[in-house]
Image (cartoon, rainbow, N blue to C red):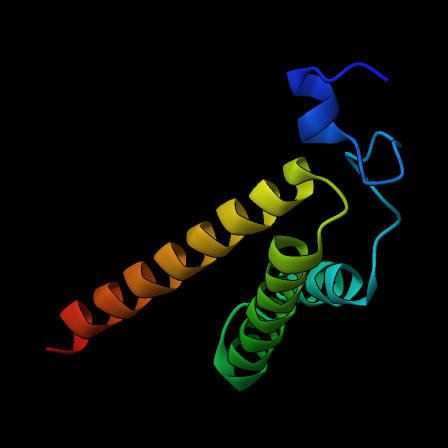
Length: 100
């Protein structure tokens, strides 16, 4: 096997190219909760679905960051985690500006 950047970034320890995998439970929960938010656009149900979706995505990102099958998957987990945290901070900031 060549020791190229591609090999180091996209291959797992087994030598398989790992970019995408079958969805695991956190991704399935995130997709379902996100889709249900289209039907419940306001209220407590929307807030609960948002919390569920964000929590599931957080769990997925942490899992990929520390146990991703390739460096690509680990970096993807880190980027999703940063995007999720940034989005939540912005939402809190916007909400605080509306209230205060």
